[in-house]
Length: 236
Image 1: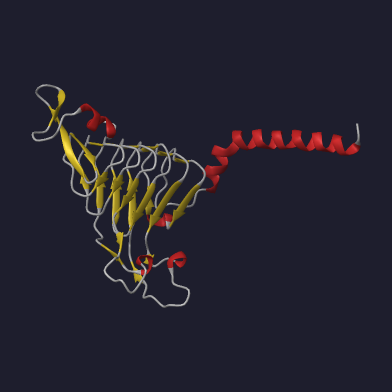
Image 2: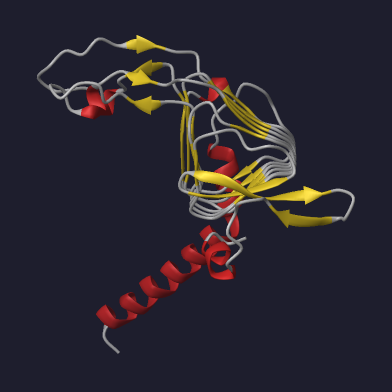
């Protein structure tokens, strides 16, 4: 066997060993790389990769677990450096955005939260993958300036009640309050408040079922189509 082949085998074995070590140690490495947040929660897990802006305005409860791909932004000014026009001066505006997680919040991954005012998530909330929560929108009042350079607008706090379940690919927009123990169907766009103990689905989302305490079961709301295929399309 030539020296070249020997070295190649050694390199492959070394790469396998390093890869195995990284997989084993990645949780600890990711935890060690986390920035300093507004508080010091117990047992916080945010799996790599993540992107976090202004962690000093982000609060976590204990035992929070966020899967890979989280993008958390507590907005302090806009436009941000990546959104500034290279040849045109756009006035910066300043904000005091905050993000609050309750205890035992979990997310499968791909969570996006942008807060120029406040996003507050209650205890024991289950967030499926690729959920987006925004308390602001890009401006779109002018045709003279690309939308990404226009000021933020429709800024209003977002609150998600304890014990709720937010389905995969759901988008929650500014000013929305979701009550306790509510369910948001997959692929829904939530533009208005959702009452506690209800299921909302669609784009825009509307309440399709409510919990009947006396009967101990979910019941379809009046005027809502009950076709099973329509309900299945939203994962509820």
